[in-house]
Image 1 (cartoon, rainbow, N blue to C red):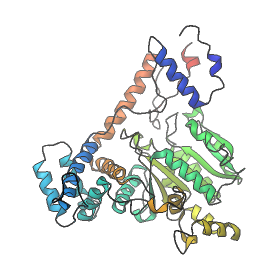
Image 2 (tube, helix red, strand yellow):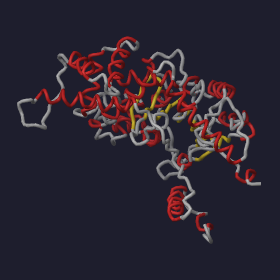
Image 3 (cartoon, rainbow, N blue to C red):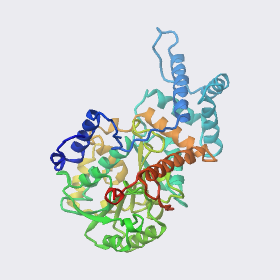
Amino acid sequence: MGNTDYSKYAKLSPFELKDNLIELAQNHTDRMMLNAGRGNPNFLATIPRRAFFQLGLFATTESEFSFSYMPEGLGGFPRPVGLQSRFDHFVMENKDKAGVLFLGKAISYVRDQLGLDPDAFLLEMVEGILGCNYPVPDRMLRLSETIIKEYILREMGVQGMPKEGLDLFAVEGGTAAMAYIFNSLKENKIIDKGDRIAIGAPIFTPYLEIPKLNDYQLEQVLIEADPQQGWQYPEAELHKLEDPTIKAFFLVNPSNPPSVKMSDEGLAILADIVRKRPDLIILTDDVYGTFADQFKSIFAICPNNTILVYSFSKYFGATGWRLGVIALSNQNIIDQKIATLSKKDKKELEERYSSLTTDPSGIKFIDRMVADSRNVALNHTAGLSTPQQVQMVLFALFNMMDSRQDYKNAVKSVVRERDAALHRQLGVESTHDLNAVNYYTLVNLESTSR
């Protein structure tokens, strides 16, 4: 790259640096650079996408039945009466088309394995994919939430929690989830300027930027993973969380960029700390959990203290879809903290949410997030778009119906083979770690280049 002066890049923000690196790569004649800046996978799940488009064709035809006497191009709401029989006919007539048989099996699975009303589910999916109604309930469509709860509990390794003990908020990916969470924690007096928040490091760089924003001005305490211990958090680091001045612990698990899940030993230490500090809030981004073997989320061991964020982006190759959920236990400590606020703070919050209900003090934190996501006043049109929720449901059903886990094994194989190939070309031995996920990797270029 010739005589390029790289010193000018030293003071750039991560985002400015990213843009400059892309420009360098595009101008470099050898074009030997790879943009891996956002970790976008180049693989994706095709069957649930085919099912989505086929369902859309069926739903559009259903819509046209309602106004068949009108000029072409005008449709109405789908008719519930006879919908299931017309869908069965659609499946039989089009079973040779990819994605259609999956739709038929999905209806059967929802009925036989999840115990849901297939007629109500089909109507929710048909109306949802048409996008002909506002999202109702605004937090998440009713049966869609039930299905995604099942998916989340399974994939996050949560045992013993009934679906009724869990609330979900469907959001536009993990980034929107983080924006909504931090904003509502501030609005509801849970965090305030100058408060201390612990962050598991190393971490996705923008997550280091959020607490420093003028909106929050939080003091950061790093809980640093040790590369000599397989990028696990040493016990001494985790014990920093016993400090009562630390309001919350924010981490990515499996980590980004080390790409390692917390070990069972680390989870046990954290659970013990939470027993000593039942007021500690944990915010965990578990987007890479579906790439791990026998993954167990912190939410599985400390459900009442944990805000769980999960995104469908990486595992299903769906970064452009913007699909994610925020999960909270019905017994979460944030609701408890709100209930113990001062009279002055409670009065302010009652005024903030008074347009939503006659009992604003009874609104759960997760529902406050929904309202806050639309500045409260626009809560009546809050919610993730219904076609997005339909695709989310199809992704989840595809994974749950895959009893042999063929797709999961395939994507794990892809990322692990790529990790091995990278280390092989660098001439570095790739160590086998049961906690490694291998979606990302960290390479010590100084030692590698010697």
